[in-house]
Image (cartoon, rainbow, N blue to C red; front, side):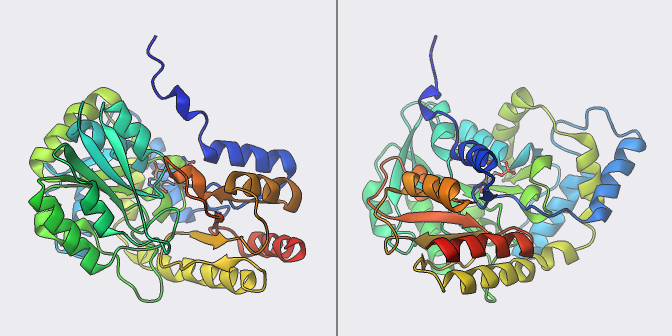
Length: 378
Ligand code: PMP
Ligand code: GLN
């Protein structure tokens, strides 16, 4: 039997969450909030189920939700996505990314991914029959466009970009997006753009979406997720926005993978999106947590890397230990009682670095306890 993807083992998020639970460690590994979502959203979910919205919604997603996504995206980025032909509701960002890649690449194609890269890209590309070409980012986790250019071949079909970037917390600049646009046009590439952290950018910075660049949007699958934005990672509702032709290819796969996704959540989100306050306030909410966390870690020998967005903080621990990243993350979890994610898992060929990622999407008291443990042990 063709043992596809078995070599990937179990994802680091499952492994580290299990290890954290086993050792009673505070889980700053897997990225999810330990606080509740807005009660209004939760009530909308219950109301939708009680109102009888419990049968299959349309394959492409609930029209009201597609309209809300198109309206929000177009207002934010000046794009022109049509709710009927350009938006599809998915089972989270993971499925948007997976299905977008199945739709646009195949056997013999190469897809550029920027490493460190989120762990689902490489297996999704391989599942499509294509090869993932990992291009390392710079030491400070900026996109190294010279290396990207040097990695292009006649077989390069697509590039995956992720901004704000997991795990580094960096964001792409306007210049990055212009460079991407020029390269994609020159080499006729599809772009799969993972923007699930679009509403978490700090210090007054702006998120630069592919949607804001018309020639780029014309060849891009914009992948979003409500899990991050509304503190409901377990709902697994996301979407893809892409021009009609790309969306048609996307839906050809979507209808035979999930067909459609959880109806009550689609109703709840459609109603909840009418109020922009929840996502407009998200950057300020997480920036305060980032600042608390960074200020406290600055009193340890850990070296903080820049964090412009997402809810992740990457640190260099070389002043503390020479253990490889996976071993250090295990040691932190089992001996210090704070779980982290080693950056090595985000590379096909890990670099000789000493970096781990912490998630700061936690209650202030959770962060305070984690900080206390780290300050005492390091
Ligand atoms: N992309 C990135 C960069 C992520 O961090 C995540 C989730 N942590 C996803 C995609 C997947 O999103 P979802 O949970 O909605 O599937
Ligand atoms: N995206 C989350 C992270 O980076 C985890 C998602 C998952 O568990 N697959 O931590």
